Length: 124
Image (cartoon, rainbow, N blue to C red; front, top):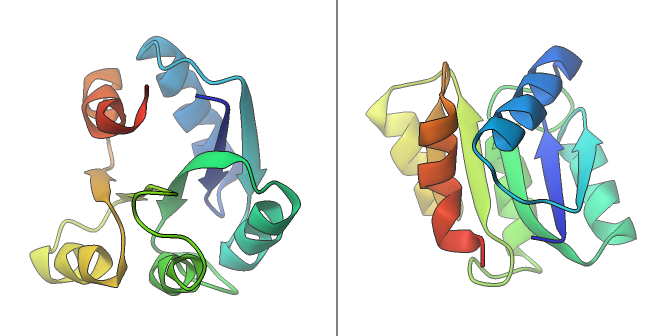
């Protein structure tokens, strides 16, 4: 995979996700970061070749659900997969994320195996 975007308001969580991607042996040439959906949209505009987005749900400025809605205005699910990474395990929220255009989700805490399983369909 060429470029991946991690959107999370916690810089620590972004670093953890990067480490878990390495542990899961997900090959990524370039990992970009954003602290919320607004910054995430700026990254997408500056880097149209981003291949996949991992986004938190609960963030300031623009939350993950609004971020997915915004992405889907210009990118299809097939063109730009979005995987939500969340502490929320409520089925209503996760169903809503999928309805708004997320391709899937991973619940925190996650393991290299759960990350690999969620991303494998889009790595290729």
